[in-house]
Figure 1 (tube, rainbow over the protein chains, first blue to last red):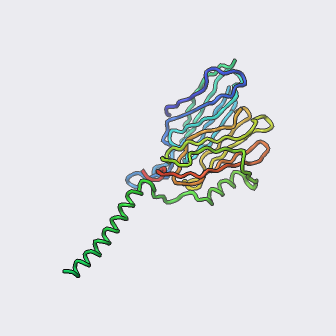
Figure 2: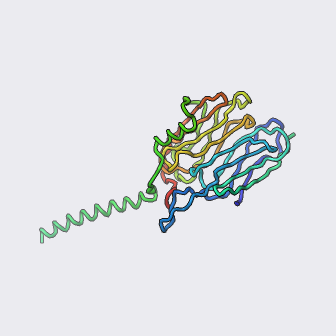
Figure 3: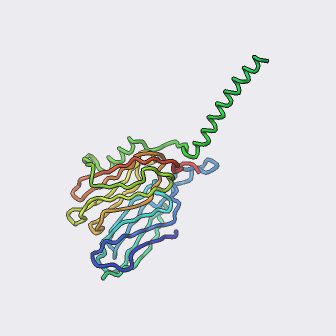
Length: 106
Length: 162
């Protein structure tokens, strides 16, 4: 779908509050613009983002056309256990993209 | 000759006035993209009602960080943080972002859990005009808290034109 950048600390202490940053390349076409022939450009945005930590949802976002192109999100979570943090973006067309990051918690 | 000059002067003056207006318009054009439909403070209020229902929104506990003057409305950094211990019994459930004058009043809804540890979310948004941005947080006890910031946008996000 697109190129994504995910920033999750590789190691963390148990109980530490860590920041997760996610950036994905996407035009976030608003549906309010017209091309040079006056034709409306159809809306095509990422409308949903979900982050899970070893399968449990820790953060979710509903996005609207007011989110800038190449949507960036930053949020926090408590490092509870070693495992996989998965980030999933869903577009208007139903396509999804998943990125995974491993974290080691001591 | 004199009379003709007077007429010419008047025409010239009108022409210059018109040209001036056009010039001013072309300077402003990149700043003010012409838009057909856009959200209004009333539609923002309606969008907020959709989220909170009849509940009362109190000012405070929410901190909305936005630059007061934005040079480029196409990408504006926003950080929302809420004072909360983020425990199972007392945490932020959701954070909603609204705007007054983009084509749509909604910007984003964020849903948090006690596992967040810290109720802080950052993103980048589009602003089509100078306007007020509102953040509303819903806490686990059902209460709503808000913060708002007035932003001046010098180059608006051209959401409707290429």
